[in-house]
Figure 1 (cartoon, rainbow, N blue to C red):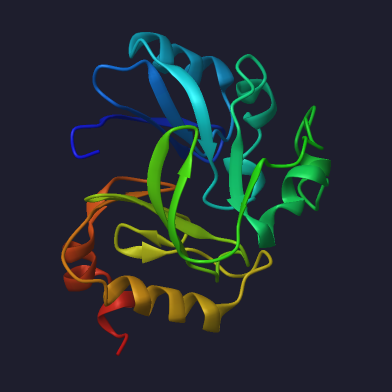
Figure 2: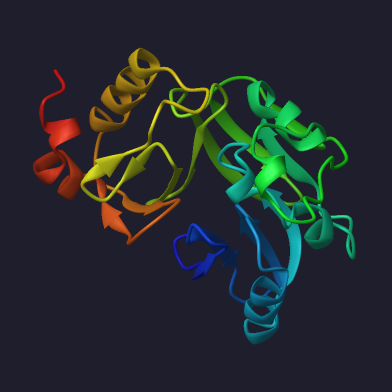
Length: 210
C-alpha cells in the first residue's frame, strides 16, 4: 500500500476532497468521498487507467456522497460507511431543499463498520478508526502511512459540530488521533493535505488537548 497512486479531486460547491487510490500494476481503485462532479471523478479514473472497485465514505454529509449512486452503478462497486451514518445514504435530510436534483435516496451501503479495526473489502485492506464528533459515524481510513480524515481533522483546523455533531465526542476523537504513535500523511475532506506531526505542533485544537 505504500506505493499506491493517489489523486486528489476537489468536487462540488464546497470544494470537498475526493480521493482516488490505485495499486501499481492493477486497474483496481478505491474512491473516497465522491461528493459531486461525477465527470471529474471519471476523468481522473480514466487518466489513471483505473476502475472504481470500492467506495469509502468518511461520513454521510451530502457534500461527500452525492456522486455515490452514479459512481457505483457501472461496476456495482460496494459502498462502505459507519453504521451510525448509514441512514444518510437512504434518506433525504435538511440539505435536500437547497440541493438541485438531489439524487438521494441511494441504495444501502454494502459494508457497515461498527468498530475500529482492519478490514478487507473488494480485495483492499485498510484500517478504520471511528472518530465521531463531526457526525456520529465519522471515521478515518488508514493505509500504512496515509490517513484520510474526512471532516474530523483539517490543516490547522477541525470539523464543525453544529450539523448533527457532538463537541465532546470530537475532542475525544482528536485526542485519539493526536496520541497515535508515529506520523501520517493526512488527507482531509477539505483544503490542503498535511501531516499528523505538523498538526500536533501547529493546530491549536490539537496543541491544547491533553
